[in-house]
Amino acid sequence: QVKIFEESLDSFKLKFDNRIIKQDNDNINEIGHVALQHLKDCQSGSNTFCTWGIKGLDSYIYLRPHCCYFIGALPGVGKTAFAISCIIGQLREGKNVALWCGEMTATQIYLRFLSQIAGVKVSSMETKKSLTTGEFERVSKAVKEMSKYKKTLHLRCGEDLEMHEISSWIKKIHVHNPLDCVWLDYFTDIQPTIKEGFNGNRYEAMADVARDIKTLKKE
Image (cartoon, rainbow, N blue to C red):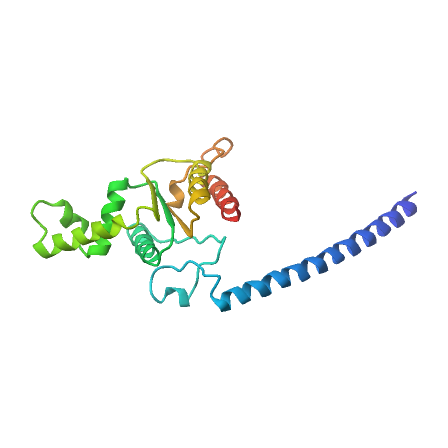
């Protein structure tokens, strides 16, 4: 009985392996055609990727479609400032961008945009009689520039949301106005969809959020 079982198992493995090999070959041919068309589109310029929005950065790493990039640094280094700089550049290139920020309010984020466009510190804008005439004019121009992006910049700020809620918001925008890039600030501010079972383990909770982000980027 053991011998018969082993022979049957070997026969099954052989058939299974042959079938997998055939499927792999078919997949490779199909992937090859897709890859070739992708290269043709890139070379003709019909397939344009979203850039970082900062001059020179794309020569080091460019944003691939349906990919996720994590930007990490110590507190106060400038992660949000970097994101806003990129978004401004993307908006100026005509891209459609969404930004979720769990730590700041919409007003705070808007002032950060004005600050970078106008080259004026937020603290100066919020302090009585601290803006010069020239600075006030630059801020006014920045407000006018921001008004141009009312259909291409989508903000949701100051809310503690679970990943599935953020996903629903992004999908709703994408259906009517396809997004080129989505920014989530910060990753650790996102609440896991399944809160039970983590027992205070932050690592497992963030792993759950990361899996949800991975699913979203595929969709």
